Image 1 (tube, rainbow, N blue to C red):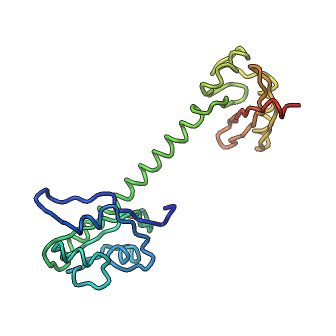
Image 2 (image 1 turned 180 degrees about the horizontal axis):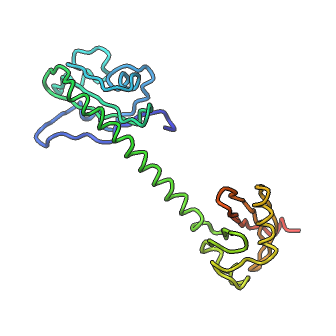
Length: 227
């Protein structure tokens, strides 16, 4: 998505089949498809499956030379879609000249939509996994307060909780809880400085009003920048 470019990630064929130059040119191929030409370009433009009875005789097909050398003729491509967006393509080829098969086209078009939903779920799960790791991997403390109660603390907050003589499920100091309540009340971020463990930290209170909690993000203040 970032480069608006499609890349061929895999080529499959029976082991006994040798596709020669056509496979070499196809695997790893990168295509921006700006002209909306060729097999992929037509599918991207229409959002629908496209069938070419003989790609070796199609002047707009981009790999026509290697297709001829490798004996490739019929070409069919269906989009992997999420709504109207084309996420990718599946190309199917034959060494025979073949007329379009409407039932085959419909069946694979439906599979393309299913693949699109599967890919989007995978992306969402990966994004959630990344987001869930961020607080845990943060070298500075991260806390979550519900009222005065500490609902979450990352590993880096351990020494802070020990200093406060509390733990997850316990209460934060009154000064911290008061700032958190104020931030949640008006939905605006706050920042204060806190000293602990021989250092000074700027603490940002980020209210999540709809969920009724406040996240606290600690950032180390270098000694040269301290008052």
